[in-house]
Amino acid sequence: MAVILTGGTIDSVGNDRLDMAWYFEANRRLDDGALLARVPELGTIASVDEIPFRRLPSHALQAADWLALGAAIQDLVGRAGADGVVVTHGTNTIEETAYFLTLTLKTDRPVVLVGAMRPASGLSADGDLNLLNAVRVAAHPDSRGRGVLVVLNDTIHSARDVTKTATLRVQTFQGRDQGPLGFADTDGQVVYYHSTDRRHTLQSEFDVRQLSALPRVDVVVSYVGADGALIDAAVAAGARGLVSAGTGGGRPTPLEDDALDRARKTGVVICQSSRVGSGRVVRSPSLAARGFVAADNLQPWKARILLALALTRTSDPERIQAVFDTY
Image (cartoon, rainbow, N blue to C red; front, side):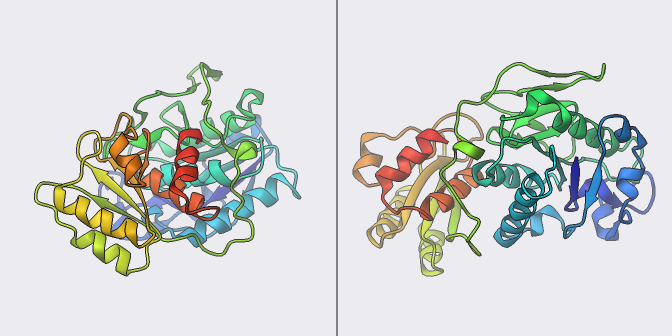
């Protein structure tokens, strides 16, 4: 079993045990090997090796980091023959990294992302148990072939469906529409209750192994009084795709709609999503007529990832809509 440390709260060190809000300002981390050493019980589950990788706050990650991380995981489950991989990660963007990996990795071996809501130095830190459960899930035979998983707070989530719903609470991660896949329970058992039917990993058409960058896709969030300035700016900056996070079921303002139509006429692919956080955005006749793509129930930041990957293969909105209906 390989464990890759990429940083985040799980290996952060604050100024004291009650420093659980501003610990990141201390800019301190556990030494190499210290996180695994805190959980000697890991050895009762699997033979675990720590794999060096760049450690960064998750909100500082770039597409190049995703590509490098994916290549490292692919090498571990391929040439190195790892039975599974656990990636420690900051919770701010863990769902985005997990979704990118589930769309691009070519393996059915378990890959589990794990983080923490309290720093390693905090009173009642949650990272140690989260790490133990992540290794337990990655080592379990029923985890194979389920795509990339996210494990926190005893709960197993699909990379596609999981999202962070609260800024500070340990129960922050939820699968809004679909719920969790299962649990790493307190009796030491890993139990699954369902799986996702959406395509991932070995069934995915996306291959990024020869890429050094991804197409630029920006997200624009709607609000009362929004005009088209941000949309026009994204197009001017070179965006090949735009995700519009509209109000309600996916409604931009009239001025945003005008700007989105201008962007579409220049060849930019528009994906209509919602800022709501749950529920589908459907492709209405007017969206189809305008050549727009509907995001289904993907949240805007995940729709951005899928659109960027789709643009590595096609710019045809009909084919891209088929991608959104499949993944």
